[in-house]
Image (cartoon, rainbow, N blue to C red; front, side):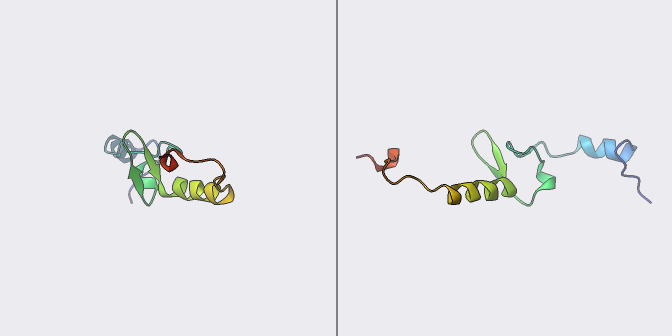
Length: 72
């Protein structure tokens, strides 16, 4: 039987080889999420992307305020 308890030798070795990539928003590492999207200086996981999309859908853009991309 393999001992994976937090203080065990195997758990300590596992931390040495853990991926340094983690979501910049929630802090979960790449092994704890389904997908991790890399940006120029940050990463975001699929769960945080879903939460962001939910917020954007609940609060649509004010059509009266032009976006930078809308300017000539």
